[in-house]
Length: 290
Image 1 (cartoon, rainbow, N blue to C red):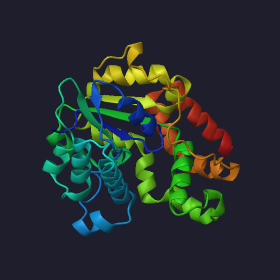
Image 2 (image 1 turned 90 degrees about the vertical axis):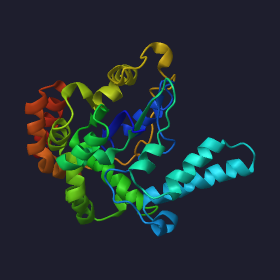
Image 3 (image 1 turned 60 degrees about the horizontal axis):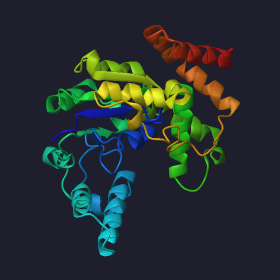
């Protein structure tokens, strides 16, 4: 079956925290691997699935190896091994994607993949054609901090170096590349998804609320999904951090660069949402560029 909810982003806005907490809810089911990237990436050929270097392919192979090792030790689950084999080895198509979401009585399947936020409206239309009743989760973060966190992650993936070891030109080029810009254009992304999904199916949350009151934030997400949101369903470590950045501090010069780069977009967000969070984002940006 198709998932009945999608967490579409934003990248570096708490999606790993959301994944880790939702997958422990007894009325929800999420894949054992976060971010399937079915809708935002071209289907990889078999050679790429077996030997490709992209993170997605390496994660799939690593997960399959782990399941094979568990099976060899006699502590594995055949269903989990079968899932890992389908996920890693089979051709990507609608039947493959549906097969990754089992029908389990009393559990709602879903996926979280930040790449989906930046789908254009036609691509979102294809998602809607397959799953018109799915609920959408979109978390927003101050674009200045989101850009910095994304870039720090990008440069870490290139090797053991930290972002500070690259030149200012290389870092600023990553801030402004087209793929990054699509992640940052929250209003365009909301418009694309809202063209096909009505407001009652879209949850827009703010990273600021997640940080300030994670328990309450999770309750609001669970309520949107229509599952039990009572205290007994909240993990005791809900306030724990998941996939947090490794301590790279945003230098003042890059903060000013990003404030200038995002100022118009943040002003548009402030006009659209008119809430305390986005007002604070705008005021911060204006202090930085003053």
